[in-house]
View (cartoon, rainbow, N blue to C red):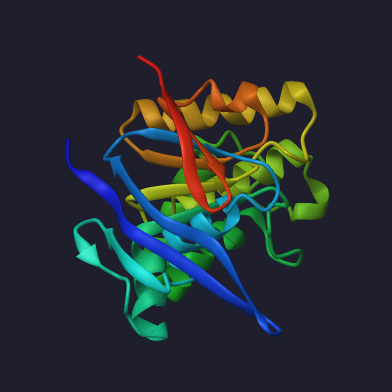
Length: 228
């Protein structure tokens, strides 16, 4: 299977006063296209730093990162931002919706950045809102929606540019158990349709949904589990 994500010897160092913190320490990782990967580990293990690298929000200090076959390790800020908007979708624990925008307008944000024509953007956002079960909520603003509905908007927004990888950071962390299961079912459906998913979670029940789980410790992949 083709690796849609590949890290080779990825290290990330941060200066903290006189000290250097090694947040990632020589990580090698391949994620095949269509795989559902969960990332677990205690606080400070490196999982957030790993997600930032995979999401093109940061660069490795040393090592290389290939996204969909392109080495993005040393791109400048503008080029890295273009790769992020074109190839990646993000889902966050706190939804990160824009309060004064409607459901459709929130979904359209990545399309606006990409320069998609307004009519095309509206057609795409409307289709995604319906796909997320929000067809009757398109003119609502985030404050008028439940937590689960807000997360569905966030997933719709993440899918707007048809990304090659969907990255989720504790996507059910702010939801009750029943609503969290509904969101996990949505993610399962995306994976079943061929989407590549990488989910950071502290919840073993979330991780059991994934094809594969890696456990981070001290900036390294300590161990991994695979499921059929």
